[in-house]
Image: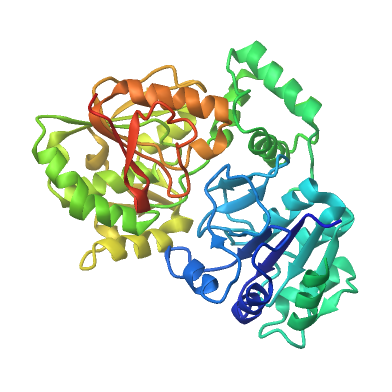
Length: 184
Length: 276
């Protein structure tokens, strides 16, 4: 039933996201949309670091790229990444949101409009509140909001904010997130 | 976050009002982008609904200028993507300009001016400013007036300085700027020779004989119809062998079906118009 997975993370999320990418098989049945805060003036290195242990291709999309299953699309540095209704990526240099570009909130909210209840939204470790509003949008659209257990997060501000915004009951460790993704 | 959400019908009504009252056609802007900007404008100007925006546009001609200003997305910062600017400095501009009797550069949409400012600073550093003719246009006269005065948003000064340092390690951006009354100003002498002109949403005006077009991160906001049309415009005003630089995460492959352009700098999205 699910058609896409969107994951947001910031400080302390690298370990969790690499573990998830390492656990998903080649040809995974859904696209992964990754919005991870990063240094904006450093263009290279991050995608390559994520790719090292990933079984599925990790790429920074170009504007208007079509979204395909089995690929992880990483929001490019210094661009917002929107998910369009026609299941294409739209990039933007518009204003920062909560001091962030890319903004997790914007990616999540537009993915919710596109995939509705067929979307899994995951918030990982981070030191800010970006993503909480977007995860609520996913929940309101009928999708499944998942939050990394704050007890496991290296920095728990982001997951706690997401839990508060969604009254969430899917509080998972990284291993539980992986099990959930492998089952769907 | 912007909680006001426009419907598609509302968006189309606004597009129609703009078309009827100002003969300005935004139908080929990317629909979701355009809708998002309309929501931003409605909230920013406390208009509360699509009907109020239509009424304001219909009855207040001066508001249309504000509308155009808000529709233009800022370039975000000076020397955005420092590696591109380093490439322009180290490998690209000097040999091309020194071989040329006059080197014409066009910025089809200067928006907040930061790309233009970055280029004139770079040319000054390279002592090439006297060999270059720069044309700059915008659909927003408000924005262009600000750019003519060299104004930029001081809140970006920290990132501007950091980007500058990544390119010019021994220099300071502040040599080229002044700060007055809470605004940043590029030194006015740097902008004296730039030829500014107004543009409509279809970019019907363009200079000829252009050797370099700086058109970074603008196609993001157009749909495929307008992208293709504007790419033809860019092609027609570039000289054979001239260059087109677009945003790092933009590609023209979809529309380059006639192979008018060849990608010559993959990491920096630099295209060259074929010689024949």
